[in-house]
Image 1 (cartoon, rainbow, N blue to C red):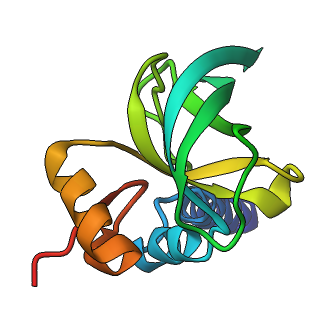
Image 2: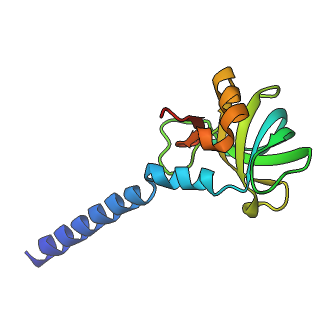
Image 3: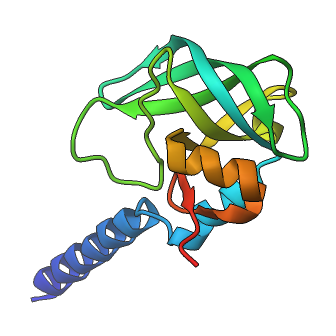
Length: 159
């Protein structure tokens, strides 16, 4: 009987551990991503000039994205050529708080970078949004005040 109780406790403990481990890798609350974008010192309209694979794993590809600056909106103005780092998922489903991006050479985007993480003029991409006419118009008339940060991207405010 003692062995059954011990087995039951071990099984329960293991179940709780697995449950908590899954929670630790869950998607973060939206405000975490919004704050990451808002606190990113590099905010810019840029054109993707190159994408280099840094690392390939079974689940994702880490990429170094070369951007050419069109216009800077952040506290830190990057060089004419600057770099962002991101991951692209290669398997489904992936759990965790990582936002995956799929940059393509030639795309014009509004991008934000956490420049602290990788040094000057480079950092982790905190948002990546294709630039369309609506976003371009908002940036031209209202600047950053006209944008709403979301999960890994920005959009014109709706108010």
